[in-house]
Image (spheres, rainbow, N blue to C red):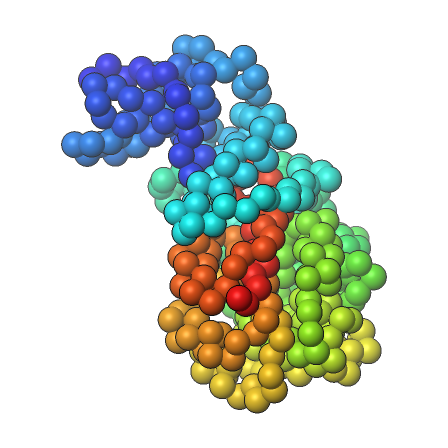
Length: 398
């Protein structure tokens, strides 16, 4: 097979698609209109997974990636596209996936006000003292000194991370509204701490193997004038601007007196919902997140919110009030059947389902549509220049 193909369309993972002798060729980092010489990554009888070796010609609107690691790194997928085109791609992607579940509603798109340097969290791999991300499709490290979609205060700490002399491990760095940093390290190595440098870098805390060794294991973040304590291991959305827009969507679509917030994390959506509800219950499995949530409710003077620690599928039965609105923001695996059955059993009039995994969202909506209709769909560009997006579906009981 001649390893050159013209890209005709794109798949749901941000890859370009072309065809040679009846075989489908998936080429990463390519878009329709490109003609690509490719290297084969994987080949079967029906398809080839490939990466570009050289572009014979480019789509006339193709861009040069703003990140020097783009063609090696597995993080971003769409830096070769105009930003507005990435949004159009995501709309088509979500529509195609949801159509399989019989859902065909108009989609409102919330774009990112700054699609570069927007992430407040970075997860780095360290192997043989190299710090970076995995190369696409491998466990080989692409060493980086700057991530172009991550906030600069995090990038500015990378030289300090190198000075810690970690040979192998993983590091998560997150920041807040004030550019303060929480650094969580997982390693078996003895690390070097230059503590005198950290106050100048606004390092709020350093956590080594779940033990705080400098500062604190949490900090305060602010979204839409609401205060949130966030511990190093608690879930918090990675895009502050889009997170603020998500809050507005929640506030606009909560109905009724009683709200149940499933997978509530540090209580962000529970607290937002409490502004329009009489009572809110939040359920979360991570202990530190529930501690954060309780403090967050107190900081924001929300006395109508209760938080429950445990698995959603186990604790949902503890709620005895009649629930009017259920907010669902599950992990990527979506809902288990037990939880779906319980939601159908408690019969809320309104469901707000938030998902970063559209395929699983589609499957769960198909299970819920025996009793519910999708009335609104939002796409929030939470993860700019990747194929991922945050989808919000508002459902009403028939």
